[in-house]
Image 1 (cartoon, helix red, strand yellow):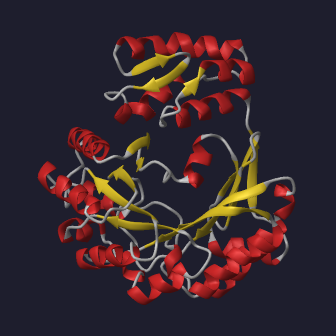
Image 2 (image 1 turned 30 degrees about the vertical axis):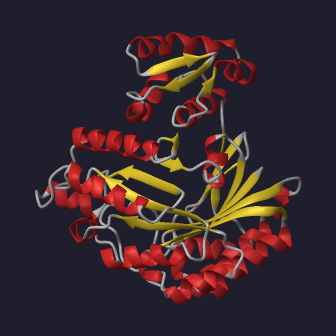
Length: 377
């Protein structure tokens, strides 16, 4: 299984918390779309022996593109790669882009999965985040989307300053009321060089509380599991048959090509990333060169990455896989360092598979960092 990720680096306005690569100027949109199509063609040799099973439009805000532009990029993939008979093709979209007419148009394309960036159903939260949509648009677009799409995911953010547990549960209940099969949910984090970071530093917005975020995370887990969702990854919940194939492939270490400025790629032994600058990206592609950097992953890199991704999922980390693929020195290290977390009830060893417990899930990234193997190579 292999996937293609296409990064659309445009947004109508900048969310206060976002540190992804994007531009709010659409002046170079036409050039950028043409360059994305060219990069797709340039890199087809990398998947000469692979079948593409997922195509994912991320960003940025992919829904700022027209249907024709989205179709062009999908068609370019089909013309240059072997694509499975029923690939998962996801479009990230914001509610303000999803009019009833637009949803119908997208449903007639090859896109078969929508990931809608709701974040909250409350105006107060949306204004704090500086989202481009309002609460009514969020509800209206989902109500319309479920008429035309079976596979829908929405994003929700918890841990927002001033949002108590009651409002958080109202958010979750509202999401459940639409009958959607997938929810991705993230804690609000203060990233450097964002507007939110500046507002926190100036005392305009209080620092998000880790304790409140953890409490709301646990409420979310209980609520969604009670309603038939599987908590298959730290931030992702899906009904059976509706796990994100794109994201699952990433967590399980499958190959993927990242198209567009700032996009990352992975082939099992090497990782590469395109330049995070639209103008320089356009210049490089225009000259027939891919403006990217590549690193060869050391055994320690591969071990650390497997620990980081594996502990976030229901599939966990296999001690046998670590030993077979990387060597006994790594599996012994993992057994030794994981012992304290097992004693604390944060990890469990299930027949040679290390998994986070319910109380350890929220701490998965921190636990993983403590299990890393450093300074080997």
